[in-house]
Each structure stands twice: as structure tokens, then as C-alpha cells.
Length: 257
Image 1 (cartoon, rainbow, N blue to C red):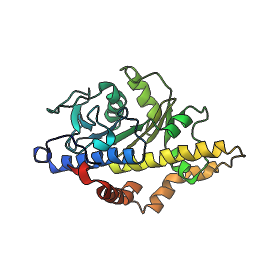
Image 2: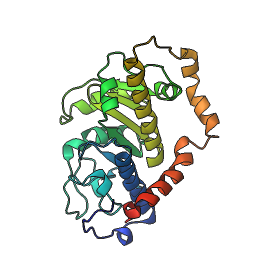
Image 3: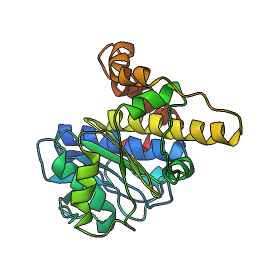
Image 4: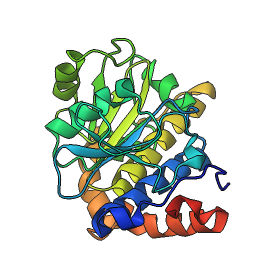
């Protein structure tokens, strides 16, 4: 749906590179809402401003994800302080996890975090993600875990978070939710699509009550090479993102404003 909020356009105030990232990030918020992964206003997706290491775009705190537009996104620094004159506040606590990852992983152009029912359910299972599906092999090939320490408010948790993530692109936050990162908004979104699918499949498979068949660990070890082959080296995000944008345009192109 189109938001009734009156938000002045920022298109003429930022570079073309930044505007493109703004459009992609606004699209990611709208898609998270469309797939029903949102948790009202309480999760975040961040993207690094092109050409910078310490400037990021984040959602205006209080707007629903299906209201977010390219112009409403707020530019912040690594401490979560606003760098523009946006009338909307930012939730500094929500940026704690993101800032730690962006600072440690310069390849993380986008960080996406959710509190979905399936994701939190699996994060509460001691064994974590199980090799039960084709989707799971791609997650398991780059998966890390971080134990729950309460709402992410403390600076000292950042070091442990970065340590636990290491060089992985999927992070299960125990008792909390899911997180993915990628070299683009498109890649981070596709990673979350896989992660959420894996959790939904696992919850359903375990609820069935029958004996579960696990994928051979040797197959999991080859998952990243299989992914390169099936996407012809382009990456799944590059293949799926144009179609996802077309879907959003059919529903409501207001995210581009």
C-alpha cells in the first residue's frame, strides 16, 4: 500500500549510487513485509552508503515496513547518530548488532535481521539448523551461532558477536532470530529467503513426528560450489532481484519515492 505520510524526495540531494542503494533497501523492507517476516517496527535492515565505510542507511523508527520509501531512510554514522535532517528517530539499540558487523566485515554492504516465528523457533532448538532440505545445505555451508545475551544494548557484546560470526554469511541468534549479510541488498535478501525457508521446513518436518532423513555431510561441503554452478557465477541475488522489484512495482511502486 502507498503510505499517506508526506515525505519530501531526497533524490536530488544524494548521488545516483546512493539513490540506487536507497531504492533497493526500501524494496527489501517492503519485501520483508510482503513475505510477513516483519515484527511491526522492531527489526532492521541496513546498507552501507556507497563510497563510505562509516555511513549507513536504516529505517525510520516507527514506520511500518510497508510504509518505507527510498527518501524516508535515515543516514546514520557507526554510533547510530543521524547525519541528515530526517524528522524520524532512529532506534540506536537496533543498530548495535548491525554496527558491529559492518565495522568488522567490510564485505557486508547489507545486514538483514528478522524475528520470524520459524526463525525464533529453530533458534530455540539446541541442535540448531538440521540438514533436512536442499535449501539447508546452502545455509549450513556458511552458518554461525551467537548465544542470547538479552536485548542487544551493550557495547561489550559486539566483540563476542563478531567473534561468533567470523567469516560466515548466516548467523542464528539463539532465542532471538535470524541474520544475514551480503555484498548487496539483493544477496542479503536472498540469503534470508533461504534461511527462513530452511527454518519453516524444519519446523514442519519435526512437527510431522516421523523419522527424519538427514542430507549427507559430504553434500553440504560442496554446497557453495553447487550454488556457483546453478547461478552461473552471477549469484542468486542478481538473478532474482529484478523479478522481485517487478513484483513490488505491480503491488505498489511507492517504495521508489
